[in-house]
Image (tube, rainbow, N blue to C red; front, side, top):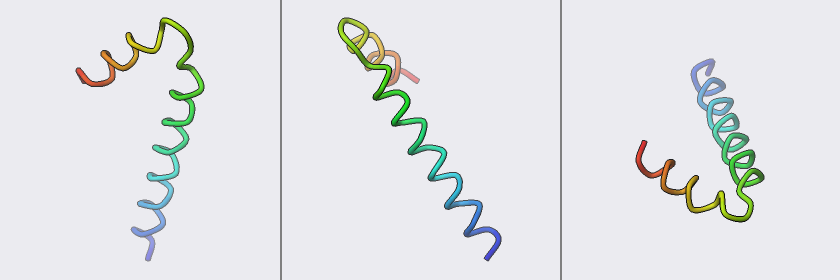
Length: 40
């Protein structure tokens, strides 16, 4: 049960991070961010 909580909170963190990345994508930065993101 405890482990399930950890997984859920981990998923939430990842979703939050994705939202932050999306929010930061503006204008000419978009392509650079996509390129950097896919290379890692």
